[in-house]
Amino acid sequence: MTRDIQRIAVNTGGGDAPGLNAVIRSIVLSSLRRGWEVLGIHKGYQGLLDTSKIIQLDRDSVRGITHIGGTILGTTNKGNPFAFREYTPDGGIRVHDYSERALENFRALGLDCLMVVGGEGTMEIAHRLFEMGVPVIGIPKTIDNDLEMTDYTFGFQTAVEVASDAMDRLHTTGRSHRRVMILEVMGRNAGWIALEAGIAGGAHVILIPEIPYRIENIVEKIRLRAEGGSPYSIVMVAEGAHEEGGSAIAQESGATRLQGVPQLGGVGFYLAAQIQEHIALEVRCTVLGHIQRGGSPCAFDRVLGTRLGSRAAEAAARGEFGNMVALRTPEIVLVPLSEIAGKCRTVPLTSQLIHCAEAIGINLGRQNGFS
Ligand code: F6P
Image (cartoon, rainbow, N blue to C red; front, side, top):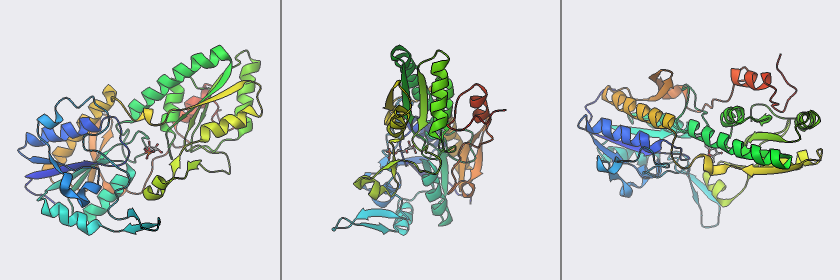
């Protein structure tokens, strides 16, 4: 599908992640150099349904934004045009398919390419739009790092930095007070943040969604540490972690009904109560939450975002639509959206990260599988 490009648009969808503005700036600068016009679509795919807030992105609009968190275009995780959820007057939820409207608006705007920056949900929608004839290019974002076919998504390294810094701070309190300190981090289906930040921050226990835990294994680890002269422990837990035979803990609210996806959170406090039942040490829990997603991207995410953005413009120039740009160290490559849509990259149980954690004595909630 090659075409002479004159006007492209970019949107950012799903949860924000540090590095989004670096991507937008990179797309804009590399597109302007090619003589293209760039439009910014407000709030992910929602801005394709209501086009009244579309803006022109010029050099001035992206000046000095690389280091700024969030996204100048706004974002939402409630804007799927194929399954748009709206409240009915009686408080129920109705789901509409507005994809034809999105397509009509794309055409009416005279666009030659749509660049979508987002996670798995955003890529799946991009793939469906591509199948309807929209020339799309995907750019992988998520602090969870759970997108297939890319070594890393941008945003992840910043989240790991923030979480490992929090671990350092919890260490000093844990040690001084002789407490068990729990840190709950994000990681809906995948434990990448918990695992990397846990290793970086010297966790004694790391719980991830991929390995259901047994409380007796955690208690045993804490007890052995105390008996060995270390009467404190630091526990890192991903929000999606759960007990063997259990499921992730979620909060119900009006917002989650509209979003159609449960809002995870609470496993840290649940775990604290479980541990406290068996251990004389005081147990405390900290939930890091959106602190991991906000603020300035680290240098790695700024560079990765900039590389992905410029490679996306190059792909558009070559008419390589229906693909996502991806990091295959050291290159930025293209992978078909069809191979990413509907998939989630969890931590493989054979991962060297898991092996490494257990090799140095970190407990992952199971009997140490290290040999
Ligand atoms: O997908 C990224 C993520 O940070 C998940 O880890 C987390 O479950 C979710 O976003 C939280 O989203 P929200 O901002 O809607 O609460």
